[in-house]
Amino acid sequence: MPLYEYKCRKCGAEAELLVRESDPRPRCPKCGSSALMRQYSTFTAAVRTGSPSGCAGGACPLPSSPCASGGCAGGTCPLG
Image 1 (cartoon, rainbow, N blue to C red):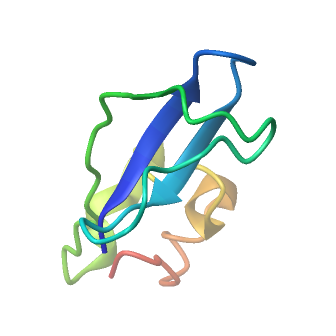
Image 2 (cartoon, rainbow, N blue to C red):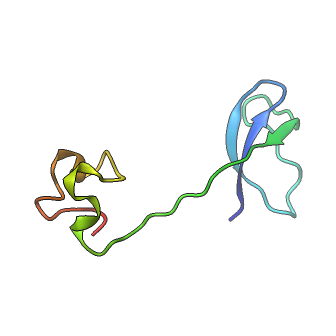
């Protein structure tokens, strides 16, 4: 699904919107204006290592996961 990030030129609101080619021009969810600028965004991907060693030693890319409290050492790594 094509999700795009937009910023409204009128009110400054930022939104992530699903926009298909067949849809009418998107509007700001806050003020209703069609003066939206599509923003550049980055893509992310999860990496599965197959073992808890991918985040051992406190280098877990998921800081709010069990790794932050030593979960990886106990064998509960969400990446493995």
